[in-house]
Image (tube, rainbow over all chains, first blue to last red; front, side, top):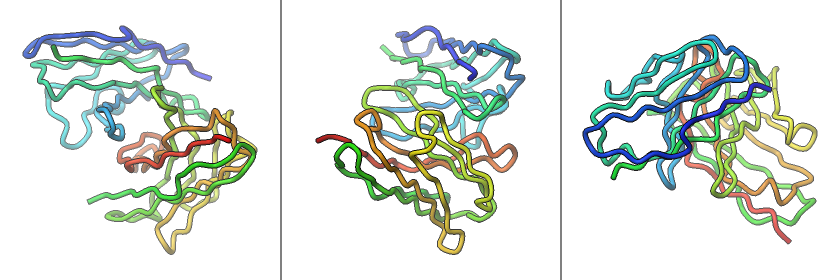
Length: 108
Length: 120
């Protein structure tokens, strides 16, 4: 099973600033890495797939980078609505498809 | 627009069974793989399984294999999750999601979820 480790576990950032979220895979997943956003009481929403391709309707403030075992989600010009838990997800080595444990982002 | 609506959740005793349904609309259902993903209270996301567009290929996560069964009815645009021998650790919100058209393995649209509570 491919384990995804996200860091930090939580972070607090001011509006207008930039947040950097990391995801490390236990083995190379090439670019088979996606990012999801989940707000309280809501279903997850796909943000990024293929490590760097934004899903339909996702603002350009969200950018994904990386390949192999190291990935980054950068959210610029943070807004209050960006408060959420963010999960990475790999589908290179499956089954099982695996998720990271999540990073909680607070906009203070 | 794409819609996925889960139903069938509720409270069930350990060892009993429950069947979830997920009704789809707004896309060509028979062309897409469907996933089930669950989330225990206050916890992260766990992949449960996937059924291919035609139902011929089904895959499960280790924690549910042999107890859960995924099926689909392409004539009615519905996917099912039959859960047998339920355990307290199966308590979670269960989401169905659509597999992306390119790889089938990325969940590009999600339902709102159905809560399953396993408790005596």
